[in-house]
Length: 519
Ligand SMILES: *[C@@H]1O[C@H](CO)[C@@H](O)[C@H](O)[C@H]1NC(C)=O
Ligand SMILES: *[C@@H]1O[C@H](CO)[C@@H](O)[C@H](O)[C@H]1NC(C)=O
Ligand SMILES: *[C@@H]1O[C@H](CO)[C@@H](O)[C@H](O)[C@H]1NC(C)=O
Ligand SMILES: *[C@@H]1O[C@H](CO)[C@@H](O)[C@H](O)[C@H]1NC(C)=O
Image 1: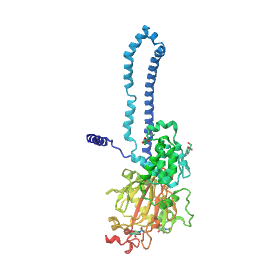
Image 2: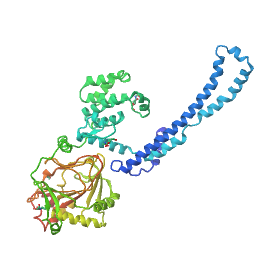
Image 3: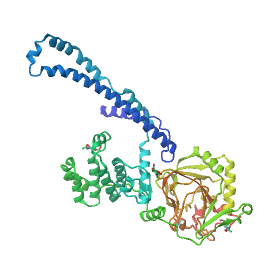
Image 4: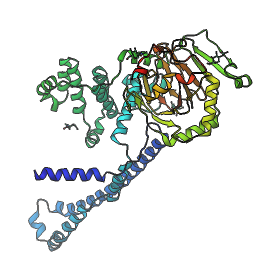
């Protein structure tokens, strides 16, 4: 009891003394990843210093051992004679009196105190477990979306693009482990087998230090086989290592009696597959008869400075405008919104929560009472492009997707009642500004339309979420954001609400979504 109490106190003290972990966004910020890279380099030089210090200690010890060995060797087999020599007698007594004592003191001196302290200090800058999990999720999502097999990833090939670099046995194991958690056992088998193949015998002692070993890989692999009802494969896997082989039957019955409870990914596989297919570079949009032209009709302003417009779909109505905002305007919004960025949240039918449906940072703008001049300009441009009215009381959202950042397939309308919807109506249309070119990935994809819209700087995507006449919610507008593979992606989402169009368009009609008025 007392022991438990002490442990409890120690644990809570440890929790309190945890250093403040400043928010670092390793997935979205290259600058933060750069800091990490520099820190890794610094730690490696620190390690070299430690090795050097250790090495010089080893050299001293070797010198000492050699010094002692010479007379001992000389005495070997003729100890009697050796000890009758006064020089030897003197030396032995003096040496035994002093030298070992000194040596013991020397051995006891810690090596690399400075360097170990350095690592400990720097530990507060290391990514958290959450960061590491996010990174694994990110690479997993890229693999899932692009159907990347282990042998391609190990060579750095993703979606037909060759990245220089590779991943290790431990990396493959993390991916396999995540697949296992999600209950994707066949996928896990592929990654775990690859992890085993990548194990390098010359690093076994290093793996030991890193708490990673081949038994861990093979026992998880065997567990996957059991989940797949491939008991023979599971047995063969366990037999491959002596320390598992001797317990193989016990392990097998353990795995069989305690089946794995998978973590739900809250994802419809068929829909995700459809989405993934369109994200891949092998997907080309069907050639359309639709047109590219200058739109000079929506507002008076456009007569003077028409916008280049590209129709992507007529039903639902989806168009793209080019070069809508200037570089300076984009930079201004990005700069002002940057400090407001936090983990993005999605509406789950009850409230806004962070979710694996979207992995990104989001900033609601403007914050209350904050009127940015650049927003007036955006507002005017939205009116020019859409002929519709944006409600200035409702915030827009800047979203920044980092490596692996994505947004699962969803509709922009809520189709539920809550205060905003009651007073403004549902989201009738969406205007999405792309702030940068994404090097690889990050397209917006409309699954029902088999339509992919690459993210390109200065482009604006505009679509209606409702059908023109009836204002019926249009489920054909189902869309998502493909994971970003290379670079980052920043967009500004603006939503146009139906009741705000009262004097512009025939507005919402009673009849369809009755619940607005009943609650
Ligand atoms: C890989 O490295 C080569 C040579 O250093 C370079 O030309 C190429 O652009 C790199 N590829 C990528 C995707 O970074
Ligand atoms: C391998 O690693 C696991 C988990 O860290 C550990 O429980 C196990 O004892 C290790 N096995 C060997 C043979 O080192
Ligand atoms: C210009 O864009 C608006 C809004 O998208 C659209 O209603 C109008 O038909 C377009 N005009 C032309 C000539 O395409
Ligand atoms: C909107 O919600 C209602 C009630 O839950 C449901 O019957 C309807 O199918 C939903 N409409 C769309 C387009 O999702």
